[in-house]
Length: 170
Image (cartoon, rainbow, N blue to C red; front, side, top):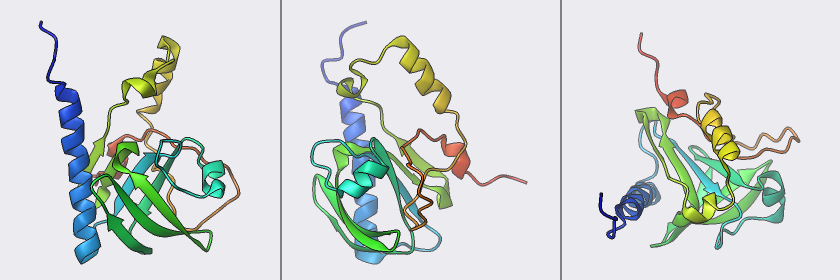
């Protein structure tokens, strides 16, 4: 097989992140229609991410935010989005580059995207680490949300199987 000099994987990733951007543009213009609500997971340590030190200490690697009822000032640029959310009764402004987004889901319509780890993300990851990643990929626990409930426990990001958001057929 010949070498992929077109870097199709990067092209697909960029196109999928375009879906996230377009969805957020619709929400910023028209609000969330019907039962739609969005889960967005991003890496908190990525270059360009702007969140408070308090949130960084609670979510040192990844953070999942939920856009449903209480969010304000959603602004979208070509490379990032900004939003104000309430955390434990305190409004916080977040700036999130699309390159830091690792997951996007709208469970109301069984839609989700998970983005591949980049080579930089995988640097220093050994075979034992990959086994741990594969095992957490089958976790059916819904992600942490920013609903304002703070039980004092430190939370970290996790890989979530989208089956957790699918409606059960009866």
